[in-house]
Length: 207
Picture 1 (cartoon, rainbow, N blue to C red):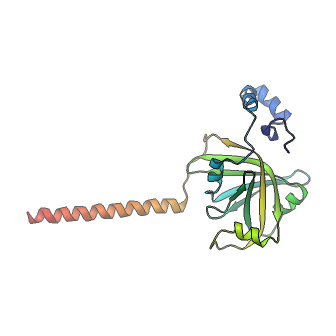
Picture 2: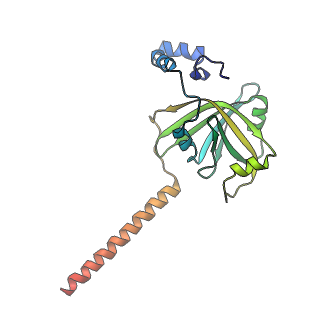
Picture 3: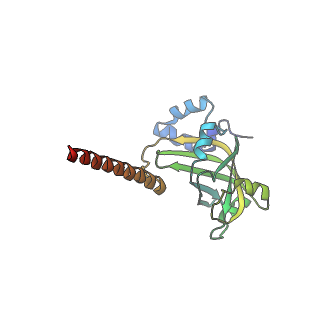
């Protein structure tokens, strides 16, 4: 259960609120709190956003509070919403440092940061995470089909609060595959137009 008065208190500590008051933004965020704070459950719109992402940043901290951020990626759909509070994904074998797993063993608090450069959207999710080893059924459910990676374990993230940021200062970038597809469609259209021009020239020459 959330022990905070508002879900946004997971980030808006008394110190943060004091700084907001000093810098003039506390009143607007107080209005957010009056409406109940941030959402805690994964909405259908958020689930749709999550499940098309190909990249996520997972933040953890060890028992001493030292933070660590790890990137996780895969094909669209590798992040799966399992219920209105849970996101799961297969954790692929990498450099085998196991910093994230060690941090979560000491401190389950975690944070997910999702950013969609093409649409200039970003989502912040606070919660907790745990590593699941040896669950073949869950692994089969989460492993992307035909993806060439070796799954080592599963990470389950439990959402306690989430917020969407404004698009300010997000550079617009596009996935290479999307750019290639757009260029391919452009080239096909050019080819069709060139064929039509050649056809019309042929008709004109006969007249």
